[in-house]
Length: 350
Image (cartoon, rainbow, N blue to C red; front, side):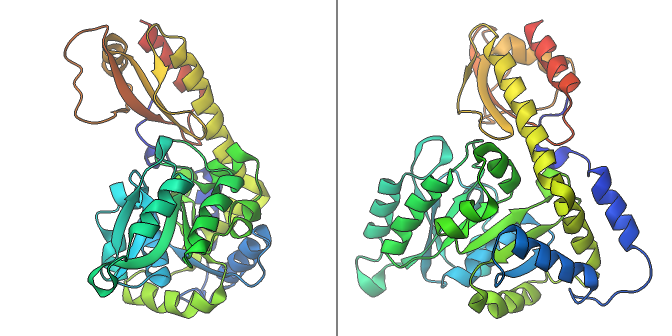
């Protein structure tokens, strides 16, 4: 009953098998192997973007940080939601890899930027010329840090605001598969057709050992990305092991099946929690994360029974009034089982 994070799950068997199969013989390093070329072609076909540049890295942090670095200058602002992953969970990596770009935080319900708030933030930036940080780029997190999902129409509305100011758009898709399953959109509809210039396409949170793809829809930025990846220490020599993961992830729609299962388990968990007396959802459950509030007594029973999840925010305590609600984040993964969900709910009910 581990609902702490989808990062806590094991790797999917198909991914492990692919890595083992790749561990045979010799292959050229640094992405010059046959598997890496297959990955590039597979992702271009999936996104209906034959000219896109495709690169693999091992972590979501560097995928996001390098993506930002090719889209703005050190004196540029990166406009993102105040609960975006690049704001809350990257330890300043975007600022580091861009050489000093400033994150400008934008409001919006349930960790999704509102177009009017984005327009106001961009319009307010750079008003005093050389004395201010300049307008740089926009970054969206989809699925969001609060488990909600931008639809293609919502992405397009934000991209339209960005385009009105001449700014490029990045999408942090660490949970892109969960967003695609939840929305029913195609990868192209969710990205370049809606105005996204660069996507961080996640695999690690959805069953891979450790691989993310950076998809650059304008290949003019490709060479800069290659240089920054190498200079930043993220060009893998034995690249075939990244490529093997990504190929298996895409094969037969595995990425969608894994995400679909995680989303379904989250929906089941959210429904069960709402049946508890005094329970409510803090944010809509649209992907694989459940943000809910329920009585402290139910939390105590769950924790005593061995369930793992985070109180959210962290500064809450299990001590105190048993009937008072505490909020929590519970994340489902590709390996969460119905038995895991029902076991947790049984503990909560007591």
